[in-house]
Amino acid sequence: MKNVEFHEGLPSDIHTLSNALLVIDDLMSELSSDTKLTKLFTKGGHHRNLSNIFIVQNIFHKGKEMRDISLNAHYLFLFKNPRDRSQIMHLGRQLYPSQTKFFREVYEDATSKPFSYLLID
Image (cartoon, rainbow, N blue to C red; front, side, top):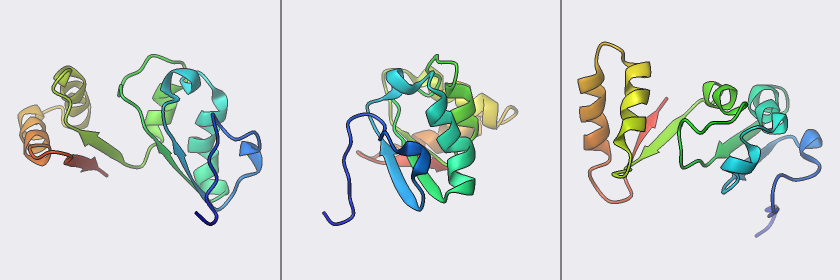
């Protein structure tokens, strides 16, 4: 594909990238304590026109940078996870403290079909 680059791990020139879309997958554990990723979310998007997609399998992964990364994400795409609904419900309590039932119902409806998701803006 033209103008598409694939890297293993974060690119070494990450601090000079601009006007780009970064898709970061399968690096949740490796990058959860890396300040470079946090800087991409806190400064890269605003100052260098970077769009970041960070794919994680655990919304509340323990890592010293994960909370800052999560708080600086503009959108969350939630897919169905029958294995651990407690994460989704915990997020629902954070977003809608007095309407957790509403959030649960919306999430269940949005993810009822295969490959469907709930977009949180």
